[in-house]
Image 1: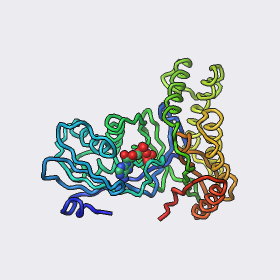
Image 2: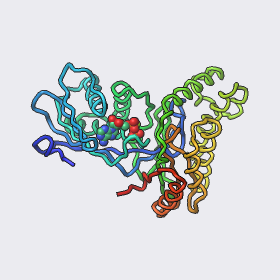
Image 3: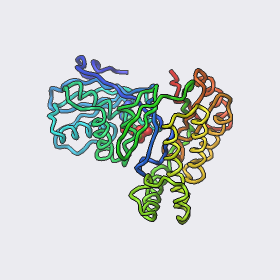
Image 4: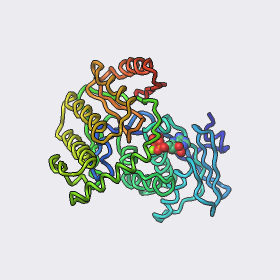
Length: 356
Ligand code: ADP
Ligand code: MG
């Protein structure tokens, strides 16, 4: 572990951090202009920054033990530096003059586990530059620039949920987001609950192609239904005339949007758990983005005492599960389920609560 001083030979002039996130409800709805319900996780990405005096940007990641220096006129860098460089380039396109900087990244957000270490890196970087240069950027603008950095510079076609969650959510609340209008609402967790997040140990290998196929199916379903996006359908009956598999794909999106909207009315822990369980069944049967390992892990969570509900979270095809559990029980439940899951020959991991 090398800190800013050890890498750059002087003390940092600014620092900032941003959390990872997990989505509790509203999966595969964001690219349908729909509703999502993420929360921040306790793990954060921290950046330390200072001015660079040699005419180059220098970015160092403690987690990768990798340093990248950027000369003007070079192509966009690849790897982790593309996220940081993208943020800086977009700030310049907004009209800000950004000097060359030294930037040190360290993070407790697991990288590549679906908890959005990429958004945490972007939002921490933008907050750090805002603080270093006193830029008048609000948190929504930061999320929008972060999303564009990921799309245009890291080459990832992402929605706005991850960056909005990292920029605006905290770990004590859920953040309702309308991805079309960007209307936001901070909502308390159901009384007496906390969350468990577990990695299934199955890599999201098919996630890219499966994701693109689902997106295309949703666009086609919306076209056949004569709406701009599936978000515009509120009556689940409206999708019944679609040809398969579009009928089931659209049924997932419409029912999932309705589940998120129900939470806005204020629901008990039990009802929230039922909505999560229904979301998993819908993702498994209608949207077909689960895999046997995720179904096994979710079932083990669901059948555990003091678990209100559980579902896969993220795009699916592997990755993580989230559960809503009784407050104070997360650690014990996660340990118990992990032991049972891994004795069934899986390689799961606990992601939240944080394992120190
Ligand atoms: P997720 O966002 O789910 O963790 P992604 O594939 O979207 O997974 O983003 C992971 C990428 O983000 C990494 O490969 C790396 O390029 C970058 N990244 C995230 N956190 C860090 C970090 N702490 N140090 C360096 N790079 C990071
Ligand atoms: Mg990401």
